[in-house]
Image (cartoon, rainbow over all chains, first blue to last red; front, side, top):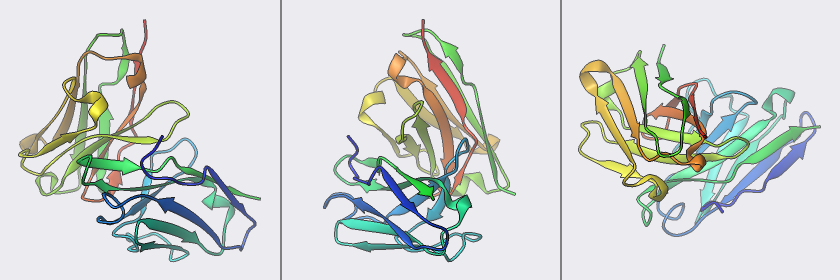
Length: 110
Length: 115
């Protein structure tokens, strides 16, 4: 059981916009910045979004993040087949004194 | 190019020990928090431990406290994870990562705990 709650799956067709939610609490998302990671099949995770809504250099602007209260979300617009991957949210938890991850969302491009 | 390369994984019996290493290049290693994250087969990501730039602060997930020790050698641009009293549930790919937001990740090293 993960501290952060994500839907296990999401799907969309090419060109569509999809969102993935991440729900937490006052000791984690409510107080700390959220990061998002993309893990393509068989590869290491890659930072997609940091500080709630910032994109590292090289990440397309089709990817965007937002946070409100104790929840965060990742939006992917103009969905492409290469976006098919697992997506994880994460943040620091002040009660646990450690990073916590969501359980991951498997995105399927139909 | 920033690169993190993990090593030291392998097959070990329950109760045994392993020492993982992560060698960094292309970055000023001493400027960054470093983190170990693991992923059990078919499962999600789990944070294991992290260490401050100068090694003065270390944090661990509850399930490894007292068994695992994170350390670093800034002169060698290297991060370590000493794993003792290994259990079957420690079987996973172990990734090292650099940065406040786990910006850069290595490719991982596989640890299998089995008799």
